Length: 210
Length: 226
Image 1 (tube, helix red, strand yellow):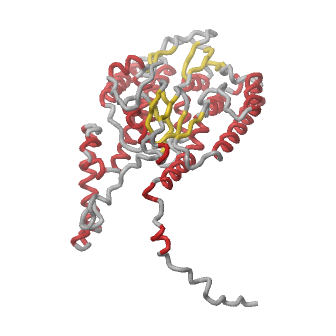
Image 2: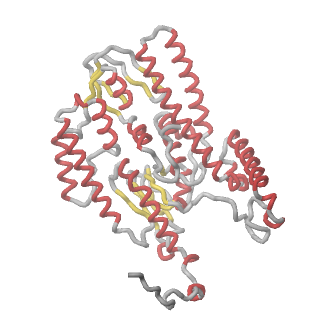
Image 3: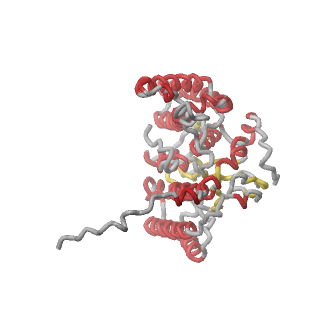
């Protein structure tokens, strides 16, 4: 199936993460009249022009694509708020908890489908980009603190996309630590000395042709 | 906030689960994520899947009816989208399970506990898969080997246990998030000196942890994998 990820590497594909993020609820202002929709995933609507209502992101983008609504960007997606977040991210090694778990995917979807509904879209976009970079740099430095004693790693406020990026690395690294720490694998000195002595050093070196 | 010990793997009643959680789609999504993230096959969510199946059928009929009954095409296509999303979740959930069954078929077939986690159809599938794989290995390689090396499960007749059966790595590290405050999680398989250390988990905080130590908590629904 398209988008089905390889089980061994990163668990969820980017498409699957987007799929999950599309269930996040956003405010929309519809410009059509439509009775309530009774979906499997819940009831939404009724829709009346100019009356704000809450729908999942996938429904919002579907309506938006057909020109049936405008999407109200979430509160955190304003220049003011994002500048604060960026500052907070730069000031401390801790990850800020001001952004939602799916901030990367949500902002991406809104940039793709509802640019005209986001005030200062270029500014917002570059701020989010900066925040991503700062946060990712912090994750990278955090990872350097790993050692053999690490049996569980606690990560605060890591977002879905960030998790997905570091998952293969952390998973394998921890497993390697775990494996090399297990008593069965600590080498038996007798068996090590059994190894063949290196012959190469004694062999006369072949002269290189000039 | 209630704290609870990891040792007691209280299995929650399905109906109770539905009451506290929101929709079946939400539950299915959780089951899908857990199944994707867990190294071994988890218990088949039979009640949930049959409920979702019924809703899907009903919805398909409704969509059919609406599209022929002159309802406005926009709302029909939205209903179809909602249906497609649920179908995707269900298919993906079942597919991951099939992938796991194929991968670990011999291990599952010889372990009673794992076999009981499968649905009826999955059991049939596992049986068929096992037979086919056995026959294939036999015809292509094993029948041509000397008699001590003919076993599908063992390297040779000298082996004391089944050493040619791929098993899921239960000591793999998984990412999880707890719903409530949990204390006393025993990392019994951690490195030697830490073995006695108990571990706490705050709600909502992500943890990378060895699957083995939280296995029971995943099964009881207290911890979600992601």
